[in-house]
Length: 403
Length: 101
Ligand SMILES: Cc1cc2nc3c(=O)[nH]c(=O)nc-3n(C[C@H](O)[C@H](O)[C@H](O)COP(=O)(O)OP(=O)(O)OC[C@H]3O[C@@H](n4cnc5c(N)ncnc54)[C@H](O)[C@@H]3O)c2cc1C
Image (tube, each protein chain N blue to C red):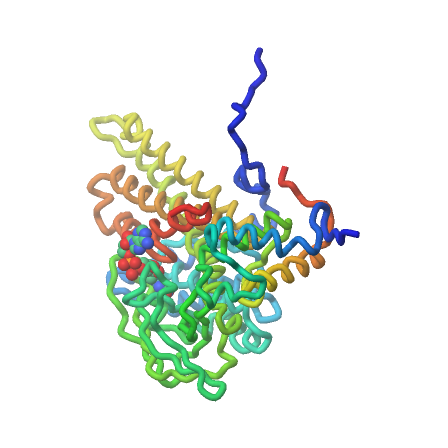
């Protein structure tokens, strides 16, 4: 047999990550137990009354508090500030279990955003004073967190924001408007990104701003298609004065704080989607076996069976990308490429999986009581928040020097 | 005598390796960059560029850039980044690089 030869001009990159990077697929017993506990908690507490809350766009403070008692809001916060002190991988395991057991995807999104985009960067970049002042409340859920970078005129080009922060005798004065702020209507604490002078990427700074700061006004809750139990609004800053101690991560580090926060948020907000997809897959398998049309179970039709096989394939591929990204962030530091790949795969598979589930359930799937049409409405947002699918592709290609 | 801080990496060549990556991959040919030039505020580097620079130093010097290290002080200039790289190598230990194989 001829030896396998490479043509001479062909060069192969054999750096560490050329084959996808390292990974260890084993879960510890603790992580398995945490995920099981999360499934039990979520199916007991977060699965009822969702049709009504979704219809009326109701955020449940009681259920928020129940999540906090369970430890979700403070999952990443070190124990010295009343959190659970878990790493990203363990948090992903827990949130996957929550997504599987819960049906209130909106509430879960609110909790995951709070934990990832407000508590997360305070853990990562906060000064000792900032941590001891803000983290205990965020961890025990008495304080609700939000993050505000998006503006009406910047959107996907988030770093082109126009909100300004100008120094005035050691204080900073913030002016501008933010939109699509998850938890805005109910938040006690905002991380607000503003331009602090210089035009470049180093000219953005992140500020920790309490809701009662003078000059901060929250707009009315915006009505939306899905995740309707998670409130969202605009936030307006009109001469909002904060002390220098409100700066998170240093003047000019805002874009970097944001970038690391997005890596984390992509993983934490997408983890529940894996649990939801698992639940949908199981429902579809059950329905395909039980539903008979013309005395034949629909699962006997190859076209239905294949759709379910494709659902499973997409779920498992997305799940592995998510685990790998979380593993990478836990054990090897920054994980922008991995989290962008995972976010793109999970969010697109999530929408596809909801569409397939409705198709397999036929007309029943379109009825509110079957709770599948809501899953689809909830899922669509995943291809938009924390960077749209197009932006994830820009990021993935951009890291290769393309685009 | 060469001051090797990790197998195959001498303390003095960290700046050079960073500069050649910045010129080759981020700025394009012909655009000069000096050691102390402000890369971030000066608009030379955008957010993707900073991420690529972080990925580059991780691979090139076999270090881990922790999320909390991804701040302006460490990435402001080639000199600052080189200093950060040397500190990280010192912190993580100068053992043989993990080739990922
Ligand atoms: C449910 C929900 C929750 C959110 N929560 C928050 C929050 O808590 N805090 C916050 O700050 N923001 C939040 N956002 C805002 C979200 O991050 C933005 O909606 C998102 O970044 C897109 O911006 P945009 O809506 O202005 O769309 P646009 O930027 O106007 O994009 C419109 C379309 O153009 C595409 N597009 C734009 N630019 C490019 C490009 N360069 N290349 C290719 N395609 C491009 C987009 O992918 C999209 O398809 C939330 C959004 C939603 C829907």
